[in-house]
Every structure is written in C-alpha cells, then in structure tokens.
Length: 139
Image (tube, rainbow, N blue to C red):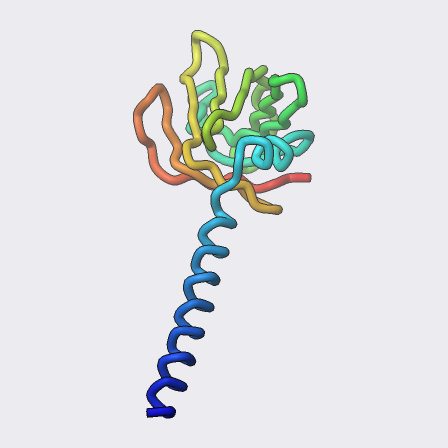
C-alpha cells in the first residue's frame, strides 16, 4: 500500500510540473501591447509586405518611431533603393496596424509575436488574409 501512495505522489508531482511548464511556455508567446510596442520602437524590421514599385517587387524596411509614425524604406530585391513611404501605425489587442494612406493597402499583422531578431504573425491586406509573415530585425 505504501508503494502505491508513493507512485501516486510521484505521478502527481510530475503531472504538476509538466502542467506548470506548459503554462509557462504558452504564456511566453502572449505579449501585451506595451511589450510589443517596446520591442518594435526604434528598430527596423525587414520583410516582404507585397509591395511593388515600377512593376518590380520590393522589400520593406520599416523603422518604427515613438510618435506612431514609421518610415518604410523600400528596396528592390537584389539591391537598389526604390522609394520611401511614411506609415502611421498602432498596436491594439496584440495586432499591429500599418496605414499607408488612402492609395495603398491597409495592412495588419494579427496575433503578432516579436522576438529579439524577428517578428511574425498572420498577415492581412485590406482585410484579406494573405498568410503567415516573418520580418527580420535589421538593427
């Protein structure tokens, strides 16, 4: 009888530890808006947001400013600067919103996660789901 109680105690202990580990790991991925903001601000994030310039695909390098504005330096794939765009941006409920104005698509990265060297999330353009996106930190 003592052996059964000991095994039950050990199994309960292991189960408790595994549950605590799972909760810890899943809570790491849920960042609040302030954490996302702090991770983005003052840094440049590079990735393909689906833009073209002069009928050529370009890659965006968005530098987030503290005044809810950003600058998107766009470069042709393979090199060469294409253009620079101003962006209004904000974060709400774990989603990043990028407003390029009335002539360009309104972009969203929903369920955004910002790590040290990358960010990722579900990418939407004018409300239409495009797919998963990853942008890399440039600085």
